[in-house]
Figure 1 (cartoon, rainbow, N blue to C red):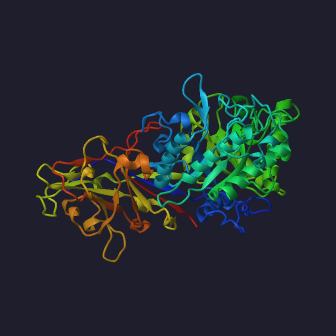
Figure 2: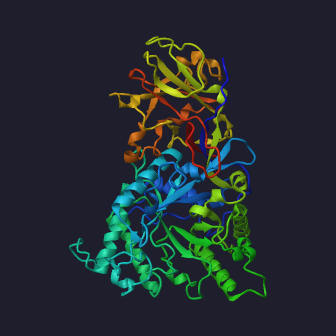
Figure 3: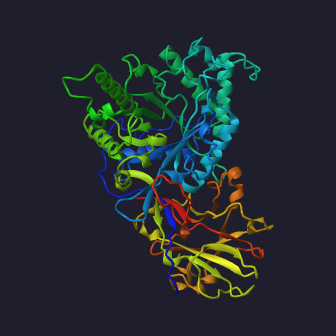
Length: 617
């Protein structure tokens, strides 16, 4: 028996224990129902979408993880980065944040998302919304969802229909017409005739609808989407500036009806969003622009400047009372109006664009927690003057949560819902070589290198993996719907491998006893030769060839993934798995990366990871 000092990681969606429950009250959003209800000609929202919405609305009543940490990943202009590189914004490892209290504990966002429309290329850039980019974005998001199981957010808006060259994107120039011109009733046939603004607008809606319809999980079910159809309507957007509020509401209602009733999309949670700080008094008048009855989530776009920070905005203090500037008074009024919309309409509130440092770096995650505390103070008052913040959706690049100060404080605050990872136990992992071809038993001492396949003399390599799943609370409820995902990353995904053999399976055995309960191989958690053929749940699943992941979205790029039943998780000791190829290929083997990500903001190769979600009662 020999110890080997390397680590693997285990991922969980953490619903941590601590905090004080908030008292339910009228208008707190906890009883809000999705606008997509069953009707005579509609099945209503999918069960998965209802569950996702319930998770958002129920944050206000939970003591644990009552604010979801979110992260915007990117859009069409971010798809050219090499997978796993520092510029790959769709690599979840980029957003890894270590705990400051427990060595080996890390966190990932519980809500992630992307834009379908954005600038691409170099100057002069073209603002784009096209199916090719959307398909790539969907594939990357599907891989993340099937692996890390976060909620998903999508922002997608038709381009300025009065600009057929698409150079201005969503800006108000040119603006040669009114939103009433874009009403669905004005669309003409054939729809392929894009010579009119109204037809161009609804053609873009169809492109967006196609992308949302294609967004599926590993079981082929539509992925629930927190959806922003018109982001930041009240700043320099063609659908806000110079337009009538009544026309905006009418167009919003048309768009919701079209997605839901015409295109049959029942996986959408509709989020209305307003920009907050540094608005004119007129742009800060929100009420008339709110589509009452056709909104699921009230969102706010928050970009804090250094001056905002110093003026106390994170504590909901808008300057010094008695000496506030006109802008600070405007900001206070807009924020109060936003909160009133959420409370009066009984809708959950989320920070749909969140930047703690819009004009300085680094920012401080402690300010996110301060904002949440200040909101909850007003949320608990009677009558409530603010809504609880169900999520904070951090924006990109230097505004990411993992780039700010006090990442550990965010990770370790029990009120913040994240996907978390735990390092495994190195002494319990490694690979074992078959004593001779076809013997079915191990021979010699286990090796430190993680590898599966065959030696040049056709002896089989088997790898033993061990994860400390028992670190989660004893009263945690494992999410059986998501199950468990095992991730392995090859050191060299371009090297020939046994995956090329017809009928090949990369089997995963689970250490399960004769009583059907999870255990350890051979009755001993430490790695030993007898683990090679110790009893277990044989070939309970198998991993995918990483080369197909770009197409099927089964896992992140360059990762081989397997889905297991949640019942293989050992709640009293290590969860152990054994992986090996079934079809012989002399000399063909895969060496798996075994070094965990080693630094904040450095998306290095993945160590083996076991992924699952859980909640606390």
